[in-house]
Length: 302
Image (spheres, rainbow, N blue to C red):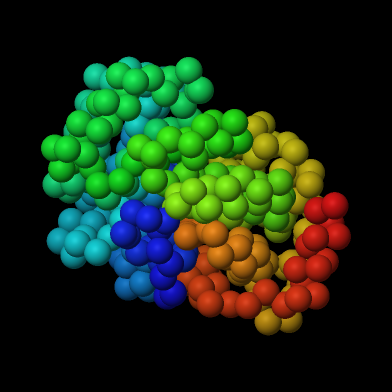
């Protein structure tokens, strides 16, 4: 597994990360299988694990903590998020300084860590970057509870704002073959010394027709989510179906290779609930996307 620097944080991360979220963290998915996936990722060289306080109904963080128990975490970048929380089947929001500090302290307990390598604000609005909040985040760093701070948002205006703030060293954006418009934003972030994490690098599987490939209850759950929340991606993903018919790499590997062609991206974070998919993703590290494939992608993005 190749590694890349995470901006100017001083941290090195595997260029493929593990997303500990969604179905992976839900009680309906076997904890034995979930732990096995984390251990396989560790054994495959993954050093970045991304989760959040609100993920999987609040179950993802503690499950990741249990999966990492007994393993050497000294060289891992375990990234979590604050500002959102599980409220039954809904997601609540609270970016008050007290709530963010409490969330970080709770995340430490859930994950079994003494310090969070990376804490990200999860989808903040522009008016929530208050001086009081930034002071509270600085306090977490001063106490040694957090090493690096970041912002995860799919709103370019929010990421642009974070790029201009010295407090935040990392940004996480939705970047994949369906989101080429993120490239100027990523370039600005890297020029400012920010580490860039690519979320949704597989475009939620929509380039491979995931909504039509139902093999288990988890697939039905992902398909329903795609049709309800991401209809644009389902529609646009059909244009990139050719990626699943390349001679030397799978569609998922081509999608990851596309993201990692961009040297301003430190890590592509992908989640999975299948060991064979994990092995496929990890094998994408170091793969070179053929020039003709990249050209074909650009034509379809135009």
